[in-house]
Length: 365
Image 1 (tube, one colour):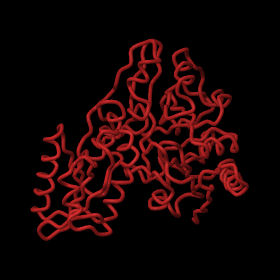
Image 2: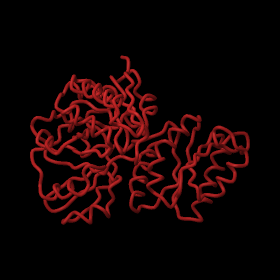
Image 3: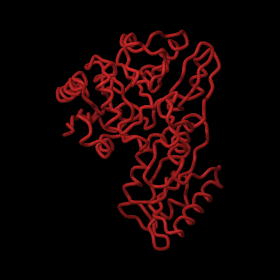
């Protein structure tokens, strides 16, 4: 299959060329095709959520197992009636507070939604993205769109159109290129119950923000799940968001964390690994060594190998770490490293989501 490339002009989704690209992508969705498109979190691979044949194409392109449910995206509140059987009071408050935005709500599935979308479960994940290109596409398509991340199953989520093409070129109908995503980490997934809200997947909307809106208790369901039975929410596979290289995670607080990071780099390099480092700006030892021998792949020489360093951003800004996380892991994979050393942020705010993705990415390898 030939994958059509459609481009939205940077910063101008309302231009004639942008509207034409969005209209073509919407036409493909209505006709039962698959389109990768940008959201404020990551790029999604979309198909008409009410068309089981179209949804099956998502699973085939991604090589995604049927036990992993999909998130349905809508452009307008009126589309809720096509996807959800009802909205309780707590869900309504969360929609008012965080929609459009990076929050997915698990609501009772409408009978018109194919069971393939929800992996046979009675609840469906639903969100309204804030990205202007995603919003324009959903409104133009006029149908709810099921859209997991636009990558091969278990791999690193894409944050630009180039990443999508790396994984899915020739496997999907079109890529709608809207530039880099804003947040770089997936939406928060919340099961909205009568007296409590359960966070299945931490994301950009934080625990603290949810507690400021929810009247009942807000809790995490933190266990890593996966296997043959249906996962209760998208993105809960034990190994997910993973680079090709082995991921070595380092826990601790500064200044000891920086030293522990460099111990792991030395250990792996001495073992003959080609090492990559996700290095925050504040980790001066790694950055000093990096500057010692600058070249295109931003690395420094230790022993017989080159250690490749990705400038991850400010350790004091978890939103920046989230934004650059997947791009950094993909960059290091492209450099040919066999192991990636990465510090774990503290479990506070968006740091919770970054830790979740890293722990899943490093699981079982």
